[in-house]
Length: 285
Image (cartoon, rainbow, N blue to C red):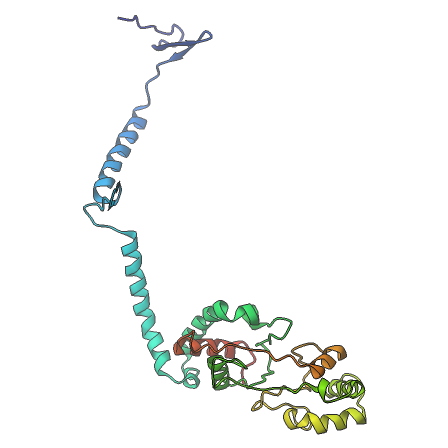
């Protein structure tokens, strides 16, 4: 039997190991640490009995309590959906214009519409509807090509613009005046269009060309026509740019933006919520 060795300085037994003349004391662990260690072992055993723990070849040990985070999540989601259904049912049953008459319902619809807008509309119209260059209109001003009333916005979202998937999509078609007018005529016409919003000087040639070719849609004074989807040319708000070059390009070979119909992608309730949110951005009529 090996003889125990005690350190003369500390009076503590050594482990018997020695490394380059350095010996290790066999100092006992603190009792509180041991108790914590034992409690942790007991806790682990108890946890593995009561809660899901060990994996098996087919499944896992479910524990005597049958607890499941997936089950708990589904229960919480079901409770949330039930709570939401109270409001969503009201939105579904209420005409979109009448939702604005109920402040509480409007608040709920706006909150839901904000999420729907962020997930579906923001890639084109920008965060909070500020628009993007290249023909994606801002929704926060008071300039509406197809109308800014809640019903008009609802219809636009529902059926879209110039798409080929919805027979009721809003349609407007600006002629390719590059095939109708000469370059100098287009230049004069662009000058007249700029003058309508206070930019540049008017000219008789451009005014006559506008009256003969553009007034039928944009109106005699360029105020636009929402029934035809013809924009107002007098408010200094431009979809494709306010420079003469941009206006000449649009007259010569107009760009025709397309918006998808959302009634096949979103529910009617979601479309109402999106319309309420867009209307709330500040430019709704």
